[in-house]
Amino acid sequence: MFSSRANAGDFIEWQSANIQLLRGWDYEVGKTQRTLVTLEYANKWRYGDLFIFVDGTRFDGGEKTAFGEISPRFSFGKILGQDLSYGIVKDVLLATTFEKGESKTEAFLIGLGLDLDLPGFTFFNANIYRRHDPQINDDIWQLTLAWKYPFRLFNTSFVTEGFSDIAGNAGPTYHSNQFIVPRLLVNTGSLLHGEDNQLWVGVEYSYWRNKFGFEGVD
Image (cartoon, rainbow, N blue to C red; front, side, top):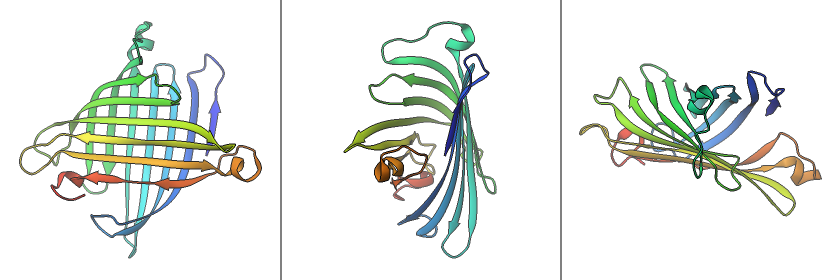
């Protein structure tokens, strides 16, 4: 992982990137076991923020596939020069996402984003989208939550983070589905010799109810 913080007043206020290697099993669709490499990049810039990720998957048996998302958000408060905070809401944003996989797998999402100020969280975001998928007859709504919560236990640094997608249904063939991916990581530097570094290890759990909108596929 790497991160950097620019000088105050720069166009990009901070940026961070990481690479993840994961081994997964017990999948309901496709090969039950697979290896994934994920690249993530995020930044906060003068008028919003940006998150990008790309998954490369190698299934047991040799097949490979790739999927990625790019999610720029635009802060109404920063663009208008107004403080839009209220209660636990820190900012209101125009939220957009483009998803692209292999073949015809793609989707466009646009909606409203909220940055929430919750105690202890590095961030907690809620985005409500209108989702357009050319392979589905109707547009659907989608709620996406993302969070990161660092904590220390026994003088060791941990972080729990993840995201959740909750999508509506589209007629008789595409059913409402819920996807949640929490992750628990431990900082190996603080664990081994009391110093922080950029290497984390841990577990990720992925649960998708009605995967791809197929009823009963969990």
